[in-house]
Length: 392
Image (cartoon, rainbow, N blue to C red; front, side, top):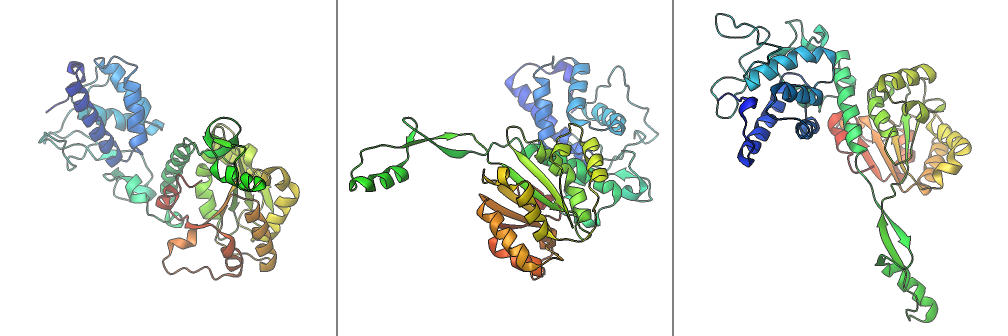
């Protein structure tokens, strides 16, 4: 059954059918190599609220704005849109079919839409390099988002790394839309703070003479991030930089980002640049000790001396991204992590080596730091980073 957007009536049943087809269209785009997900679907639905749904041209451009993120996706999107919604766009007619009824650039072996016998399209050429698509012609008949979720960052090709970078950036932006809450003390309004009230009553022999109150107020704790750029970690951290860029721009929350190897560098201001590509290029240019050795203990002591006073007084959530291969004094690292933990609300350590089931934190640096870590988690692929949503 073809879907003609020019004839969709304004009814609840029709709206439900349209949402169903939009969901299927999102799956089709994902199967064709687009990084289309639920966030894009919701963006498309929101965009449709501001247009005339019966105007096919507006409908096309609203969905294109929601799903297309790169110039090379424009033509594949048009082909998929015209094929799925069936009625040709007046400015972009469908290409002629060949003798077998197939359109050039489309592979007819994909899944079908519900209620239709004709196959949906999954083989649109996205112009990716041979490195990513293989020497057989670069046809994307699968979902890279699904396929790449469990791929170790160190095993990605250059083209795959670019795709993962976009996904990590979107993931970070989704994380920053969360609003962590803290319980904040307030006098004379809100809920009774029973713990503090009872504690105060001890001064009067257990008799409650003063009621203390608290109320919930949105006041996200600062987030402090240390990312290892030493030789063993440079590839992982470089892959995670788009995610760190998104976190550094968390609305309404103070986020500080430091990179370390043999030295430590504050890159917060750079990462707050509006354009991600520009920010990441500046980080690569200004931080000089990429792929060097690791002296985390010394780096943390330098941080405490130069920046720690103002930052640690707010008891941030602290995130360390490192494999723990430290060349410095383990005792120094132990002392530094101990001091860091005492000043933090929570200490989270992301180690890409945890992706290996046989890994054990036995290196000197990791063994010295492990007793003071609240959350010891993997950070080797997209799936492990997704698991952090809500924990920061």
